[in-house]
Length: 166
Image (cartoon, rainbow, N blue to C red; front, side, top):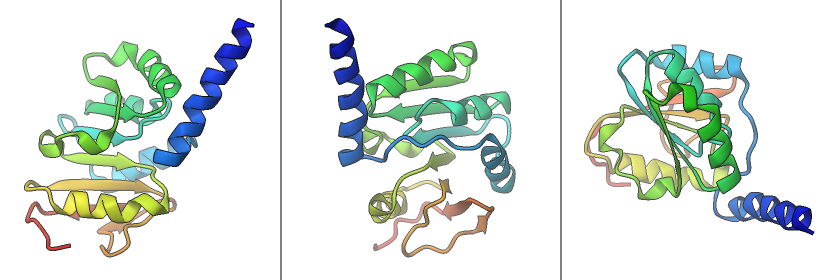
Protein backbone atom coordinates (compact mmCIF):
# COMPACT_ATOMS: atom_id res chain seq x y z
CA UNK A 1 0.00 0.00 0.00
CA UNK A 2 2.84 2.41 0.81
CA UNK A 3 4.24 1.87 -2.69
CA UNK A 4 0.98 3.20 -4.15
CA UNK A 5 1.20 6.33 -1.99
CA UNK A 6 4.79 6.91 -3.05
CA UNK A 7 3.87 6.40 -6.70
CA UNK A 8 0.97 8.83 -6.32
CA UNK A 9 3.29 11.38 -4.69
CA UNK A 10 5.75 11.11 -7.60
CA UNK A 11 2.98 11.42 -10.20
CA UNK A 12 1.43 14.42 -8.46
CA UNK A 13 4.85 16.07 -8.11
CA UNK A 14 5.49 15.82 -11.84
CA UNK A 15 1.90 16.53 -12.95
CA UNK A 16 1.35 19.73 -10.95
CA UNK A 17 4.54 21.30 -12.27
CA UNK A 18 3.32 20.84 -15.85
CA UNK A 19 0.44 23.23 -15.12
CA UNK A 20 2.45 25.91 -13.30
CA UNK A 21 5.89 25.44 -14.83
CA UNK A 22 7.75 23.38 -17.38
CA UNK A 23 7.92 19.60 -17.52
CA UNK A 24 11.21 17.93 -16.66
CA UNK A 25 13.36 17.18 -19.69
CA UNK A 26 17.09 16.58 -19.15
CA UNK A 27 19.66 18.79 -20.88
CA UNK A 28 22.61 17.29 -22.73
CA UNK A 29 25.99 17.99 -21.08
CA UNK A 30 27.51 19.03 -24.43
CA UNK A 31 24.79 21.69 -24.80
CA UNK A 32 25.41 23.02 -21.27
CA UNK A 33 29.13 23.34 -21.96
CA UNK A 34 28.52 25.01 -25.33
CA UNK A 35 26.14 27.55 -23.81
CA UNK A 36 28.50 28.29 -20.91
CA UNK A 37 31.37 28.82 -23.36
CA UNK A 38 29.33 31.07 -25.66
CA UNK A 39 28.07 33.14 -22.71
CA UNK A 40 31.68 33.46 -21.45
CA UNK A 41 30.90 32.26 -17.93
CA UNK A 42 33.86 32.52 -15.60
CA UNK A 43 34.96 31.51 -12.12
CA UNK A 44 33.31 33.74 -9.52
CA UNK A 45 30.13 34.44 -11.54
CA UNK A 46 26.79 33.94 -9.78
CA UNK A 47 24.21 31.83 -11.62
CA UNK A 48 20.57 31.10 -10.87
CA UNK A 49 18.88 28.21 -12.58
CA UNK A 50 15.17 28.82 -13.06
CA UNK A 51 13.87 25.28 -12.73
CA UNK A 52 16.92 23.17 -11.87
CA UNK A 53 15.49 19.71 -12.57
CA UNK A 54 18.02 17.07 -11.57
CA UNK A 55 20.86 19.55 -10.95
CA UNK A 56 23.06 18.85 -13.97
CA UNK A 57 23.43 22.55 -14.90
CA UNK A 58 24.31 23.37 -11.28
CA UNK A 59 27.00 20.68 -11.31
CA UNK A 60 28.45 21.95 -14.60
CA UNK A 61 28.54 25.48 -13.14
CA UNK A 62 30.24 24.33 -9.94
CA UNK A 63 32.88 22.44 -11.93
CA UNK A 64 33.77 25.80 -13.51
CA UNK A 65 33.98 27.55 -10.13
CA UNK A 66 30.66 29.33 -10.58
CA UNK A 67 28.41 29.82 -7.57
CA UNK A 68 24.98 28.51 -8.52
CA UNK A 69 21.54 28.45 -6.94
CA UNK A 70 18.78 26.28 -8.36
CA UNK A 71 15.05 26.59 -7.82
CA UNK A 72 12.68 23.73 -8.53
CA UNK A 73 8.92 23.40 -8.00
CA UNK A 74 8.84 19.61 -8.18
CA UNK A 75 9.76 18.34 -4.69
CA UNK A 76 11.13 15.06 -6.01
CA UNK A 77 13.41 16.77 -8.52
CA UNK A 78 14.48 19.31 -5.90
CA UNK A 79 15.53 16.43 -3.64
CA UNK A 80 17.37 14.70 -6.50
CA UNK A 81 19.18 17.94 -7.39
CA UNK A 82 20.08 18.48 -3.75
CA UNK A 83 21.48 14.97 -3.38
CA UNK A 84 23.40 15.16 -6.68
CA UNK A 85 25.03 18.46 -5.72
CA UNK A 86 26.01 17.65 -2.12
CA UNK A 87 29.71 17.39 -3.00
CA UNK A 88 29.55 20.93 -4.46
CA UNK A 89 27.94 22.41 -1.33
CA UNK A 90 30.58 25.19 -1.23
CA UNK A 91 29.25 26.53 -4.55
CA UNK A 92 25.72 25.13 -5.03
CA UNK A 93 22.44 25.62 -3.21
CA UNK A 94 19.15 23.99 -4.21
CA UNK A 95 15.77 25.40 -3.20
CA UNK A 96 12.35 23.83 -3.44
CA UNK A 97 10.29 26.81 -4.48
CA UNK A 98 9.05 29.28 -7.04
CA UNK A 99 11.85 31.18 -8.78
CA UNK A 100 9.46 33.98 -9.82
CA UNK A 101 9.63 35.23 -6.21
CA UNK A 102 13.44 35.41 -6.06
CA UNK A 103 15.42 38.66 -5.93
CA UNK A 104 17.75 38.44 -8.94
CA UNK A 105 20.02 41.32 -7.89
CA UNK A 106 22.75 38.95 -6.64
CA UNK A 107 23.03 37.03 -9.92
CA UNK A 108 25.04 37.64 -13.09
CA UNK A 109 23.47 34.83 -15.12
CA UNK A 110 20.07 33.16 -15.26
CA UNK A 111 19.79 29.75 -16.93
CA UNK A 112 16.43 28.33 -17.98
CA UNK A 113 14.72 25.63 -19.97
CA UNK A 114 11.19 27.04 -19.84
CA UNK A 115 8.43 26.46 -22.36
CA UNK A 116 7.07 28.97 -24.87
CA UNK A 117 4.11 30.15 -22.80
CA UNK A 118 6.38 31.45 -20.00
CA UNK A 119 8.92 33.23 -22.19
CA UNK A 120 6.98 36.56 -22.46
CA UNK A 121 6.68 36.71 -18.65
CA UNK A 122 10.38 35.90 -18.29
CA UNK A 123 11.32 38.62 -20.78
CA UNK A 124 9.25 41.21 -18.88
CA UNK A 125 10.70 40.11 -15.54
CA UNK A 126 14.31 40.29 -16.69
CA UNK A 127 13.63 43.59 -18.48
CA UNK A 128 12.54 45.07 -15.14
CA UNK A 129 15.83 44.27 -13.42
CA UNK A 130 17.91 47.25 -12.32
CA UNK A 131 21.21 45.46 -12.84
CA UNK A 132 22.77 43.71 -15.83
CA UNK A 133 21.97 40.01 -16.18
CA UNK A 134 22.65 37.44 -18.88
CA UNK A 135 19.94 34.93 -19.73
CA UNK A 136 20.90 31.55 -21.12
CA UNK A 137 17.78 29.93 -22.56
CA UNK A 138 17.88 26.33 -23.67
CA UNK A 139 15.73 25.69 -26.79
CA UNK A 140 13.13 28.45 -26.33
CA UNK A 141 13.44 32.07 -27.47
CA UNK A 142 12.19 35.31 -25.98
CA UNK A 143 9.40 36.82 -28.07
CA UNK A 144 10.69 40.39 -28.51
CA UNK A 145 14.40 40.43 -27.72
CA UNK A 146 17.09 39.45 -30.18
CA UNK A 147 19.70 37.03 -28.81
CA UNK A 148 23.25 38.34 -28.43
CA UNK A 149 24.53 34.88 -29.35
CA UNK A 150 23.26 31.38 -30.00
CA UNK A 151 24.35 27.79 -30.10
CA UNK A 152 22.83 24.74 -31.74
CA UNK A 153 20.18 24.45 -29.00
CA UNK A 154 20.31 27.66 -27.04
CA UNK A 155 20.19 31.43 -26.90
CA UNK A 156 22.08 34.02 -24.90
CA UNK A 157 20.40 37.32 -24.10
CA UNK A 158 21.92 40.33 -22.36
CA UNK A 159 19.82 42.66 -20.24
CA UNK A 160 21.69 45.86 -19.44
CA UNK A 161 19.84 46.75 -16.24
CA UNK A 162 17.99 49.73 -17.61
CA UNK A 163 14.34 49.04 -16.89
CA UNK A 164 12.47 48.65 -20.18
CA UNK A 165 8.91 49.75 -20.89
CA UNK A 166 7.77 46.27 -21.94
